[in-house]
Image (tube, rainbow, N blue to C red; front, side, top):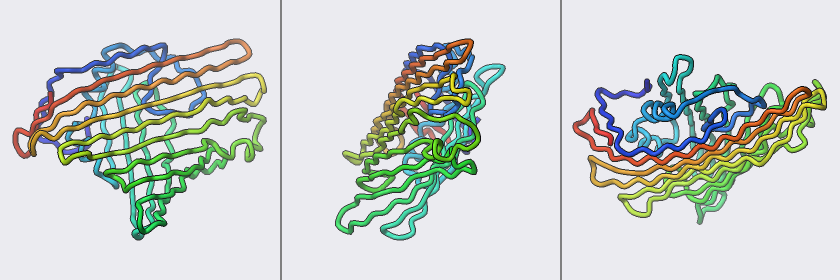
Length: 292
C-alpha cells in the first residue's frame, strides 16, 4: 500500500542483494526506546520491505521536494506491517531566512513511539555566498525530551548542497529531571551529513550519513543501565538515460548496538544491516512504468 497515485505498476526484481546479520531487531532509524525487543525476523522480511517500498520514480521526485508528505507500507507477516512516513515543510521568508520541519519514521519490527518533528531555522547571512547557518530543535511538553542543535549548509536545498548537522538529544534531561533520580552519564550526540550533487545534467549523487555517539543512561533505581550506539549510512547514484528512463544504485549500511543491565539479568543486541539495490526504470506510457 502506498498513498500516492499510480494507475498501473509492474515490478520485476532482477538484481537485489540484501545481507542482514540479525540478533534481534532491525531499524532504519534510531528510536530512543531504551528497551531490548524480542523480535524474530526472517530473510524474506527484507524482500517484503523492498517490494513495499516507494516507487523509484516517486523517490526521484521526493529528492526535489522541499514541502510534502508521503506514507506507504504493506504486510510483512501475520503480526507486523512495514510502515514508513515522511513529512517535510519548508517556508522561505526571504532570500536570507527559511523555516521548516522534518519528520521521518520507518517501522516494521514493533510499534515505536511517535517521533517529534525536527524544527529548523536557516539563515543565509552572506550575500556573496550560499552558506547557511541553522538552529535545530524539537519541542516537547516534557522539557527533558527536548533536543537542541545547529547545522551548517553549503549551497541551497534540494540540489547541489551539503549540510552538516549536530543535535544534542534530550539536551535538558539532567537539568530538568525533577521526577525521579534517572540521569544520563553520557547523553549522546547525533551527527548528520546530507547532500545532493549534480555533476552533470544526467547524473545525480545523494547521501544521508547519520551517527549517534554512545549513550549511557542510569535508571531511577541507580542499578539498571542502558547503553547504545547507532549509525545509519545511505548513498545513491542516479543516471538519467533519457526523458523516459533512468537507472541507479542505492547502498545502505546500518548498525545498532545496545545493552540493558538490570538487577536480575543483562541483555544485549548487536544488529548489522547491509543492503545494495540496483534498478532500471522505464516509463511505458503517461501513467505506467516498468521497474527492473
